[in-house]
Amino acid sequence: MFLTAEYLQRHADTLEQAILRLAEIDSTDVLYDLYRNAAIKSFELSLETTGKLLRKALKLYGGSPREVDKLVFNDVLRHAGKHGLLDITGVERWIHYRANRNTTAHDYGEGFANETLKILPDFLKDVRELAQAIQELFDAQH
Image 1 (cartoon, rainbow, N blue to C red):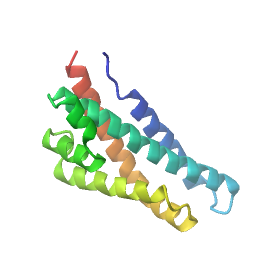
Image 2: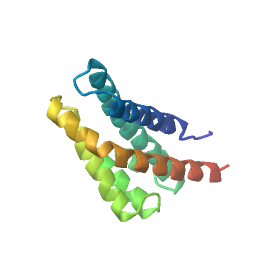
Image 3: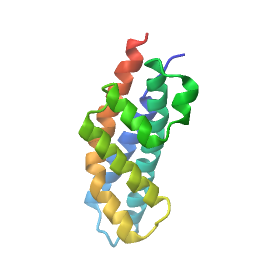
């Protein structure tokens, strides 16, 4: 089976475009809300896709598929760190991103949404780097 991080890279592209548009639009414009919502949704989708890809990556390191599938997201991140897909500070940042995402699922307030926007530029950089690392691992298998 051919594995790819293309879908994750596409989420990153969508997130980047939403962030760029937000910088161009007045926050009182309804389009601001549209792009803010798109950015947050891209963030959420990126995290979910990352979890799925990291599980596939961990299985390539010889992990038992059943055991890998049982791991909670934060443990998936820690194992990714053990295998060099993330460094220790990267694992901590991704755990923070996941905690934020868990909150976005339950809090739809404007204030919280605006707080989430603050972490998106760093998240975008991290998601691009991780997508590249995952893709390199997948490519090495072929």
